[in-house]
Image (tube, rainbow, N blue to C red):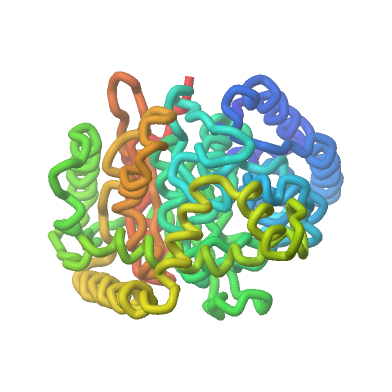
Length: 486
């Protein structure tokens, strides 16, 4: 069996009795055993639990082979290690939580289980989801399945690498500033950030609460739509969850996109982009024209301020959210002669350098005398950026951009230069600041070495169906999604 088989193909073979969930899961587990020690995409594999879940799925399928209420039944899924699954490690790739076991299921995990998914393991990430390369992990660096010398992106690098390497049929990541879409671009898979409030964040370890959103990583657009069908919906346990109707996101796939208005933000097509990325994205624009889409240049004039705005807001929220890790209530603890020393020693030993950097930045911009100058001003600029997008979407249906300015870079290449690392998110962060939906899908490859290049599409908030339809039309008219790492 090929571990680069789509969810829909695996579903069909299960329903027709051509295979069993145990056979499927065993095949994926064998692939994990063969190469995960080198890639380090998964930092915990629940072999016994996965096989038990597979046997339960086979029993259910034997009773009702055509079951439709469990769209992921018997299929292996990986979960980013900052999302709670009861009884499983919730380390967030940090020494602070290296021995912590989740006492409950995140809402998205409960929904996956209700849909019959087999949760095969926990995916590596940058510590507390703070990073763009999955190099900032207490569990070690994750390597890109296309080239082991290169990073897989971050912070959901483990989730993307696991899908690309054939360790699971799909995975869940979290996206705060591009952390699903950027690794999807680098690893040659599909990564979707739903609209803010579309998917419950209950059970996701918070990084920046006004920016975080959980979403799927898959081999194809249809698989992403299938997984979004499962995890989307209002949740009373999450106060930021929006009571919005959830349609079947697969229904519009395959519809004609003739007349679709595609906007090209002129601020995103600037000098400094890797020529191979520019060439691949230009070819994608031509392809959309051939499909009947209408291409139009638009402007997002406050784009230049997006990076600064994002890193003020996200570090401020990180500083507040991570204050709970104090060595007193749960997690790591390093004793001191008084509470202040205990607090200082615990956080000094438990947090990595990137997390400390962001806590310090966030504490600074929230401190007395600087709140108005930095944090309050950043929130005002965020409103201006949101207004830019609203005006653009009055003219066009979707926005088309590169996902990342370059293909994946080498491990260690930017780890000593935080600013250069932050700039890799330049095309993705605005979607989080605004709260709209976005997706990355393959659109080409670089040469020497051959590394995937991603195309980003962005849609209006809660217009995931239109976004997925637009992505699917391009995907099915090209061959890029059919490639897999050697």
